Amino acid sequence: MTLKIISAQEVIFDGEVTSVTLPGSNGEFTVLRNHATLLSTLVAGNVRYTDEAGVESNASITGGIADIDNNVVSVCVY
Image (cartoon, rainbow, N blue to C red; front, side, top):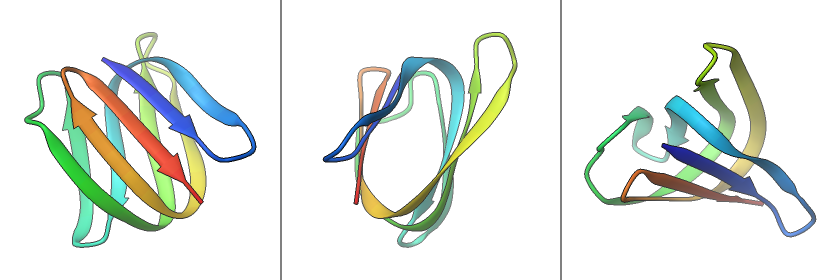
């Protein structure tokens, strides 16, 4: 699945991943391949993701919106 993390200033990450964990406003949640379509607000925390090589990374955010659709996770952050 594709993960895109973008802010108004830069593209933080754009690549293929196997999982993404997001700090949702109703609690942390994990997205895997073929996840149902979802739109969620995000709170301050870390976006954690694992790339196809198994390398885990994270990006600290102060909030934003996540859109999950057709194996594309788009995260717009403040």
